[in-house]
Length: 220
Image (cartoon, rainbow, N blue to C red; front, side, top):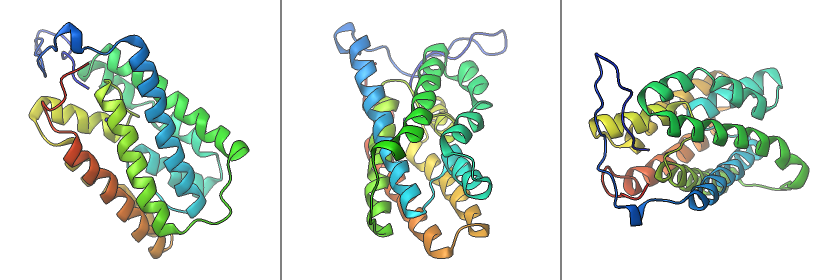
């Protein structure tokens, strides 16, 4: 799910993390708006499927799901709060534009997850199908956001920074972080649900690993 200049300080001079694309390839404001909305909507649909099937996801969304299952507080509220500490890192390492877009997408996702139960309900959902479809929706949504210099906070910010700064595959980093969070759910969620959740993480991260490579996409 972002390429920009690092913040300028005496100990950290400006350093481009990606070549500047030609003006004809840069995304316009309308393109950004539609991509960020579509990407966030895809992710919201995936989280709705996971919630309906009792599954989890990694990163801050996974932490918010765990807290939701334990406390009963809505996922949307918890997700917004859990992401607050990551904005400072995003601002100092990924830049102002990336941070603002990320904040907007996190707020929109929190709103959509609060709205979805009132407009959509699935009477029956096989957990295996939910993990496969949800993983692909998550991967697609995060890819939309990353290619328009945004994310949904948390682990995605860290993975995109490591990719842009050190060339590490964002999907690989995301897989490690998400897998760790999902495995922690063994203390709260039945083993079968955790297994389906791990499958969803593998599907999402594998999709990003293959599709989001450093230097492949130059338009911004």
